[in-house]
Image (cartoon, rainbow, N blue to C red; front, side, top):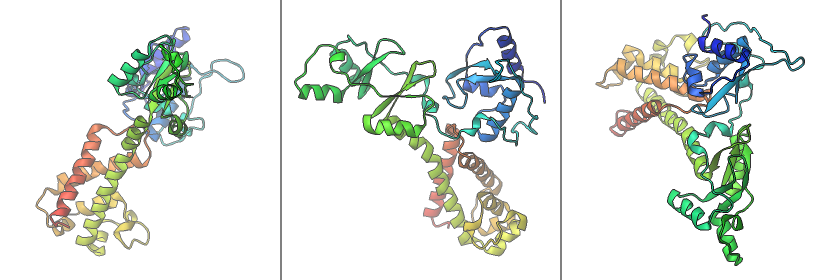
Length: 349
């Protein structure tokens, strides 16, 4: 396998004692002709990093795909001497062997993965006027604003709740420090579930990077949007698969299914369509004799090609790929789901 030119350049810079200019995770992935951090892709990237003895800072797995990362040499924990490991080269660009110390070993969904460059919070100084803070919250539809002296030093948070509580207690003042509460924060390496626990009580949490900078604020709205992004592919795939199983069950017999799929491709003791994999269902429709029994005047090749693409997306989703699906993939899921809804409503199955 050819040597990775970009990694070679990184090693050369580090060996000269220089700092490597930051690159985004997306650009880093492109060095390997990869777009998403699937399990097999991560194993391959980790093996390539181990070969040249470097690691990313922060981990390319724990940050948003458009956030910057840099690199450092991996040192032996005992001697402090730079150590380059030489794992077996993967059999393909999507290596099959799990590396013992792979950064993929931690399956937790880190809060840093949803922090984008746009997540850096708008803040006010402690001596800012209350009017300034409330105007920011009104025009930007914020519920709170951090009170900070710089990107690392947080003094507190002023919110509609903190302002209302002090008004009820007849506490007055002209600057935000008279109205702020103690802030809540977590590390970028904390899990999404850690963040949810804090947000449930405080409606927000500030996210602090390893270099101590505050790099984001995550609110209840952000969590709702994140869960929508995570759940949408699952729900659309469930709709498509359920439609497909119902269609096959109503139009084809067990013999039709066995004619399309050789025994080694069918589940053991196959008896109903609920036993079939999505791949089985696609193969069943690709079989010309079965297609004729569906009584549809549409092109079988194009239709089955779309279903094969859906199966690829399904494999990514069911392997819990940490990166969101592309807009094109989501659109494909919506389109096919809409097609099945239409066919069913017209009595096609």
